[in-house]
Amino acid sequence: MITVRRTSLRLVLATAVAIAGAGAIAAGQVQTNVPDPVPGAKPMKVERIKIHGTALEGNLEGDAVDRDVIVFLPPSYASEPSRRYPVVYALHGYSIGAEQWTHEIHVPQTIEGAIAKGAHEMIFVLPDSKTVYGGSMYSSSATTGDFENFIAHDVVAYIDAHYRTIPRRESRGLVGHSMGGYGAARIGMKHADVFGSLYIMSPCCLSARVGGGGPPNGRAGRAGGANPLAAVKTPADAANLPFGLRAQLASAAAWSPNPAKAPLYLDLPIGDDRDAVLAKWAANAPLAFVDQYVRQLRTYRAIAMDVGDQDGLRVDAGKLHDVMTSYGIANDFEIYPGTHTSNVAVRFQEHVVPFFSRTLSFEAGAH
Image (cartoon, rainbow, N blue to C red; front, side, top):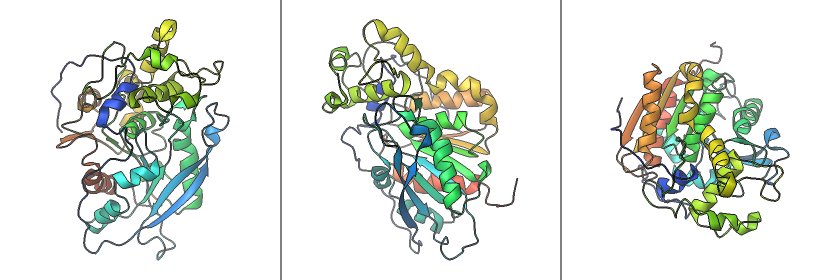
């Protein structure tokens, strides 16, 4: 295990700023280092489907209830019709959807490469959780819909019903990057009865943030952008906002919903509402609620987390590692050379897929 030297960070207004400061992904698709194709790697079958989100029905934001989902079936899936497989659910980051993330982590090439290098065959599932403001935060909200349970229940139930899975928690893995890393941490803690192994990549939004100032690495605009946010009266008004301010709207929709405040249906951390809204946001920070889920975390077969040494999120990731370690929860933590996004494809092939190959159960009849 690698520990992180603790440094003091100036707390900033709104957890969402951590998203904006995470990796300069405002432009959408980012370029990542890609491992060379592995000779002899066998192709996977890719299926693009839609899954109805019962948990998303009635969301006030008008986000799609029937969601795009990309399924990667292992090379032997068609030729071995009686064989069942573990499933890894992989969560994308903020401002992109599942389709864009396939290009960032270069799947199926990286999964095929890992299998060719010795990893066991698994099904991989990438659900799309992009919303009107760029991301659901994988949270439960009347405004966006309950994306937490959409992932943990609706998607899992559909995949188990339509594919030859091993439908037990010991054979299900959960991984995510950035906002998806936050989602993996949040859902992993709250739904340990569904998943058996957990991999958290460069997670954002782990800390409650309550002060003024800018993000840790200064990439977003001023966190206290009260005037631009106060001027947003309809969802359409947010279209041209800077990345950081749109991220704050996404966080507000997820963490401070307000069904009585049409048409945005959310409360912002501005004016008289500031302290009350920030308290709600703080309640959604994994470092604030991890102590409540120690028993659940102890049930995992394995937990891993990684982050780049040039990523401002490495400090909070190190804190989460330290908290779990202090409770005696085994977890592997690695700081690798790179930025927030530069090596995510390499990590997926060389670390994520082999991790689940080692830690998930491949025995269909095991209990």
